[in-house]
Image (cartoon, rainbow over all chains, first blue to last red; front, side, top):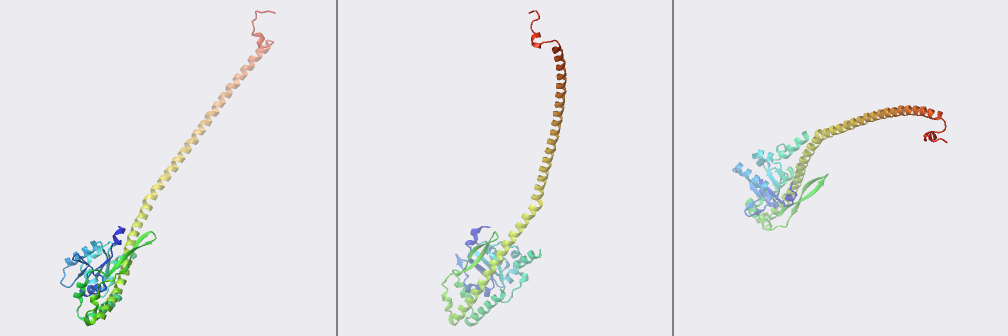
Length: 118
Length: 195
């Protein structure tokens, strides 16, 4: 695990519905560099492939420390999210206005249970 | 976490109610992040764990606060969301810590199993082999010693017998010579010389 890699990571990224992203941007995490944004707004018309591509891109970028994703969006790319094992960026599932937080669907908590189960 | 996010969403709803939809504006505004995280390292029983610290930079987002009538609402919503994000950052730190510790525990378990089932039996076998070789050499040495002792004894007996036989013969010889008178030395001189 390269220790230099996370010293330079200092941005947060968001993938979520409009309200969640707006709120996050309001807090000030938005960062646009060379036309590259660190957020993706997902609505009912967004393709799963777009979400997947954005997920891949954010996890491969070296400057993102935390990736926030709405839980219902994570559901759409559940297999990719479950396969995600890297320590960086930290993946966090957040609830949205219409979908309250459901801990049974959170991939990290599922791993916790597996660990405590055995 | 759910609670904090709910509070944040409510405040945003208030803003939207007061100002109308500001999402487009907010998206356009996002140029440089004012909310960053700094990574620092903690050392927990030999494992280096990263932790995230909130690092807020003074930004140029004052244009947002002057949004129509809702300026103050927007500001308040911003604060609520900022607090929500701080909670999220803390949660993310815990999550990464957990993931790293998980990997470390798995690796350590594998090492323990390997040592227990492979290395220790091998070393045990080596120890037993060495011990048995030493015993064997010990026995060989003992056997050799006994053999040598036996031989020495036989040699000693043989030389003793030889000595005894020689001693008896010498006495006989002496007797004969002493019986002849004088000393041996005189007798061995020329017999022709007559005094």
